Amino acid sequence: MIRHINESISVAPQIGVEHVAEIAAAGFKTIVNNRPDDEDAGQPSGDAIRAAAEAAGLKYVSIPVTHAGFSHPQIDAMTQALTDSDGPVLAYCRSGTRSCNLWALAAAKAGRNPNLLLAQAEDAGYDLRGIRPMLDALAGPR
Image (cartoon, rainbow, N blue to C red):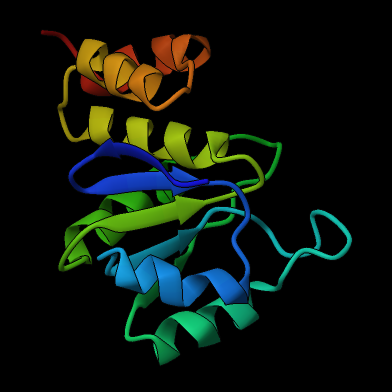
């Protein structure tokens, strides 16, 4: 379920309240929810995950990404969530793809090499080639 990208971030498909204790036990310090509420019938609410996370001593950040795509405020919020965490972050959405993409965009904007980001995502089972032009633009000239 959880796919490790690097020492600071892992991603996962939709988690439930019942998974939060296991996430905390695995050493994660922050949960980032990249899924809007009510995207699918029956998905747990962000508030329910937040309550479980806080009860387990974890930070919780909501950065919903819709099918409209990514914005600079979302990218900046992801950067802030990673910076503010005192340990590994688990980001989730429906499949983990939006979370992986948002992490990569934030990392590129922070100056990380897009080739490295593509390789780390690929090792975790995600293909970032579709957002490569955005990664290059955010990373700037090399």
